Amino acid sequence: MASHASALKAHRQSLKNREKNRQFRARLRNALRNIRTAIDGNDLAAATGALKDTISLIDKMTSKGVIHRNAASRYKSRLTTRLSGKAA
Image (tube, rainbow, N blue to C red; front, top):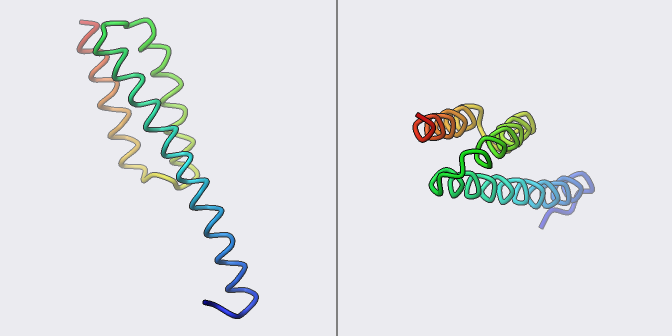
């Protein structure tokens, strides 16, 4: 275990950040699950509304560094493609 004050503080910060990032990732997984369920259930109105909220959440997580920007682009692209495929 670290004994310097700065190392102890860094450890405390890492624990807080890990918990915050874990909660963000859980929110993302839930949002993705909800929108995929709506798309698969042909509830396109709900899916369209959820897509806007999900993309906003993905962008927030990218700006905070929780997920990589390429992963964010991949999520958004696959969701919009999936939704537009059902709508057509």
